[in-house]
Length: 288
Image (tube, rainbow, N blue to C red; front, side, top):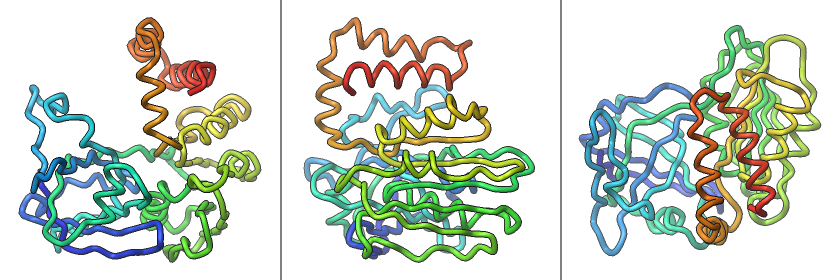
């Protein structure tokens, strides 16, 4: 569906809020989950609006649109009464999405699909830890907004500088810690943060989102060192340092190695978390 920019607001020097509206968003099918994500299609080469993907059976055929115009973002909010969807964009030099967001103006048009969630805490949740850098910050804040008041929540947010902080939602059992660094300006501390956080008694959940390689250690700690089941944590790579260079290096892998990596995800009977373990270990061994 096409969505039109109806408002733009700079929240910090690195975060720009863009509100989308238009007829297609009147009944936008939000999942109501804090970290639901969408594929955003951007106009390129002077287009006024991007083409939308075709239909392949019951699914959208993303092969019908060029991958260089598509990025993934989490939704910051949905207002059914106003018929709007809000996305907070990290803005920086370089990159298709950041470049578009820096110059976005009312009336500009992008494409959106229907969202899918990842945050999935166990039943009877008593406490949670939410840790994120600037890219994961919008989702983390929305999760807080949607968290029941009885759930004790530890929120750790890593931003590049003091003026990159944003207001945190009110929650009766929220403890917030700000960490300065990471975000492409310095090494991320999210791995260290996750390793150092206490784990209370009772049913809990750890959700961490940030730079992909920085989270490998955090995920390894949660899964292998603490031995948590997949239902107790989610570690999400939202972006990659020097992504263009990373993609170039990945593309330069020999065909046998690419086939090996693809084959890891083709084994349907294997535990997805075990597959992710093997995949991340292989990427690390390849220097990726």
